Length: 156
Image 1 (cartoon, rainbow, N blue to C red):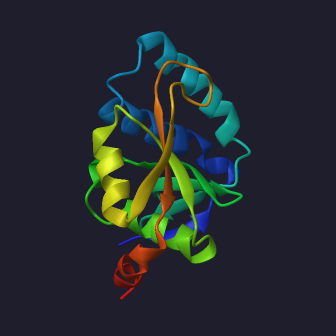
Image 2: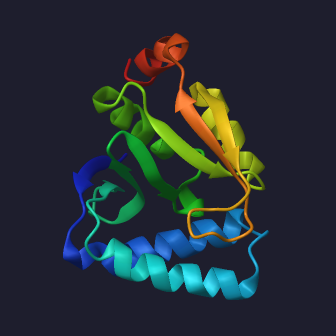
């Protein structure tokens, strides 16, 4: 069981830990020097970012998302908790506020691409590089209105 809450300054280390665990489990395409640089970037960014956390009964963060201006900039779940509905619930929560939610997924992260497709996101474009200009292609996705039934199923 988990609940959602906004992140607090005390959560930064655990959020970075979740990011590291999730990236190490799903982003085997990253060059080691890029992986290190990205961790440094997210560490400073997450210190002030308005994240939504999924926490357990002891208030331990299990995953998090960042949604800004209708775009999901981040969704990371501790791999120990994959398959328990945390990511789906976070996305469904974001969709309640942003029915035309967009996000990007690394093209090489096929599991994440399949996750978003299963939830009703459709590709709207592609970039040859990631947001930092690194050579990791992105697929741009948007939630398809025809998938509203899936959203209702998550909350029923």
